[in-house]
Image (cartoon, rainbow, N blue to C red):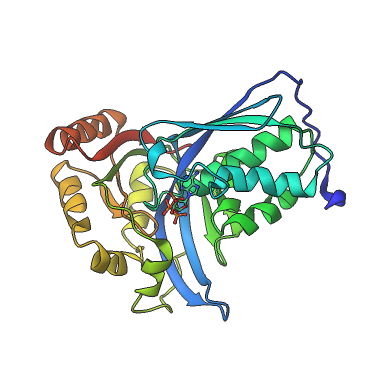
Length: 303
Ligand code: ATP
C-alpha cells in the first residue's frame, strides 16, 4: 500500500471538506455471467448526477457522526453506516494519521433504491479523509479499499475523481471512462419502494445475457438515447417480480414525454432522459403533483 502513496493533498487542520456524493445511474445494465463465489459479471453504462447526498468532514476533538436530510432516518447511524465503514477502513490502515473527525451526512438519496447512495457516500468519505488526513493515496489504492466496502464503490470513486460517465465491467470494478458524453437532463423517481440488491440478483431467471453493444461516439442526447434503446437492464424482470408497481413509474414517464425511461440498478428508482432541462423540470413537477409522497427530482448527469 505504501508504494501507492503519491498524491499529496494536505489539508489545513481547520479545513472543512465538503463533497457531493452523487446518485449513480445505470443507464444500461447487462448481466453476463456469474463467478464461482456468487458475484455477478456485469456490463453497465454508468453516469453520475448533479443531485446527491452531501458529505462534510472536519477535524474535531473527538469523532462525531451526524445525519440530516429527508432519508436520514432510514439509514443506520452506527458503525454499519458505509460512511463510518469507510472512515474505519482508512483508520485501521493508517492509525498514526487518523485524528478525530466530525462527519456530517446530508441524506438526500432514497435508500436501497438502485442509485448507489451508500456506495457514493463511502467513496466521498474515502476521498475527503484521504485529503483531510494527508494520506496521499492514489486511485488504485483507494479502489482497493473501496472494493472491500462494496462492488460499486470503485465506480463511485471514479465519479468523484473525473465525474465522467463510464462503462463498468467485471463485478463492477473494471472501469473505462467515456470522455465525450453530453449532459443528460434526467428525472429520478421512486414511489418509496426499496429493493434488496442480493434478493434481486437471486430472483434472476438468466445470468448469461449478451454483452453491451460497443459504444458509439456519444455526441448528442439523441445518440445516447438511440444507443440505450439497443440495451437493457437485465435486473428489471427480477425486480418487477418483487415490486410489481415498478411499471407504473415507467408508465408515468411515458406520459411526461420522456425520450427514454428505465429502472436504475436493482431498482426501484427509475430514471428518464429528456431533451432539455425545462422538460425535465416540468416532468418532475408533474410527478410530484400526481404523487406528492414520491421522491422525484430533475437533475442532469455530470461530465
Ligand atoms: P446499489 O445501486 O449500489 O445497489 P442501492 O441504492 O440499492 O445501491 P444503498 O442506498 O446504497 O442501496 O443502500 C444499501 C444498504 O446499505 C441499505 O440496506 C442501507 O441500510 C445500508 N447503508 C449503510 N450506510 C448507508 C448510507 N450511508 N446510505 C445508504 N445506505 C446505507
